[in-house]
Amino acid sequence: MTTLPISAPLRQRPAWAQLEAHFQKLKSLHLKQLFAQDPKRGEKFAVEAAGIYLDYSKNRITDETLGLLLQLAQESGLRAQIDAMFRGDAINVSEKRAVLHTALRAPRDATILHEGRNVVPDVHAVLDRMSDFSNRVRSGDWKGHSGKRIRNVINIGIGGSDLGPVMAYEALKHYSDRAMTFRFVSNVDGTDFCEAVRDLDPAETLFIVSSKTFTTLETMANAQSARAWMMAQLQGDEAGIAKHFVAVSTNAAEVTKFGIDTANMFGFWDWVGGRYSMDSAIGLSTMLAVGPENFRAMLGGFHEMDEHFRTAPFERNLPALMGLISLWYNNFFGAQTVAVLPYQQYLKRFPAYLQQLTMESNGKHVTIEGAHVDYDTGPIYWGEPGTNGQHSFYQLIHQGTRLIPCYFIAFARNLNPLGRHQDMLVANVFAQTEALAFGKTVEEVKAEGTPDWLVPHRLFEGNRPSNTLMMEALTPAALGKLVALYEHSVFTQGVIWQIDSFDQWGVELGKVLAQRILPQLESPSEPNLNHDSSTNALIQRYRKLKTTSKEG
Image (cartoon, rainbow, N blue to C red; front, top):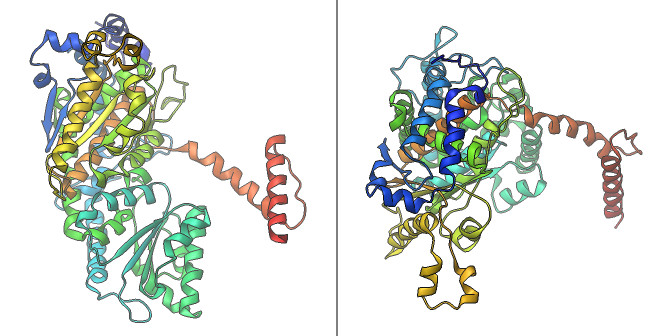
């Protein structure tokens, strides 16, 4: 058999053609049949690594499906691309950058080269500075300008500078210092900032301004509002800013101009993308909340999953398997969305975090070589914690017309044990995956005494796929493993789709246009508008309503 180069178009790969033919044979096969054919299917299609147990038996796959997906990974050069990422090659081709978020959680004695330089000492130097600062704030040694202890921390960022810290804080709240208040401001909507500071004492408040360039429009607008709010308390004493603001940035000049002491500026690197940065200095709010020891435990969890992904054979590789299974539904079944359903209240922001990780990474319409793809990429991720979702959108998953693969996330031990609650919670996980897979037949519905006219409404077709991820408890290490698991599953899909999972040009156009429109909204005189008729009319209406509101 002739082996195509890994740059060959995806749909020309032998495994892709074989998967298309295989899908035609498999598409009408029911999970009931698959389980009946193999009584040990639930044990066979399961794998455990790094403290995570993945049951993927309730998927519409066979041994042949799995073999072909693994062949596709091989034909796509997945192993070589993994090695290239960990080696520090510039796999972010459109920005000509290395992708080394794995270096953020490498142990102190590791060697990871970027342009001939070992970056690990630099990473640990920042971590040590973060640890020292966090210990000073948490102990009360660091005080505000008036001598009061810092009790409130507000992180100002957007995108990866917000979603990761928010998710991590909520996920690890059990481990946080409850004597301190943590809040997060990202939206340029003034309400976000006003509500965050409404009940806080400026003398006890520390702001973390997270912006690599220190020029991000939304972040700096909120930072300037925070500065003005603080200056009112300081009665114009500029020197006090340095005691109430720190920066996560690489732009020392702008940080200094703002009034922040560069000794309290924590940097990161171009080889870290925003959505992959929660374990960098962007996670300073996380470290302040849970302490350096717990933060480093989280990094240890990240690293353990990194090593598993880097070394494990694909047939036992958790991120590779998850990525391949998701691709199977996206590209062959035409599933447009993926539901992430954590049965753990602390993970309530995890689906939102995954939305950026997955959709900003793989929402691409051209290959790394610039050719338009002729297959779907980047499914839509969404979800809510269980059991809440069961009383909301599960109706559509069970009886709707769309196929929605589901990922259930469960833990054996609850950090807040309360009577029967945890057993009830986990019982719902198992029940939902069983109901989705096997449904309820007409005969079963009738056997319950259901009138004939009601039978169609109470019928569950089943054959709805799901995966179950199970861990012992939501510890800092467990969170690191879980996030890294999804990072690498996204990478797996991106490699096979031949796209750049590490750029995000799609967020730029709207930003550029907003900068054009803003002066037109603020202009005291009637602006010269040269947009389309819709945008022109909206600008005019806004200006009119704004004027009317002022007059009223």
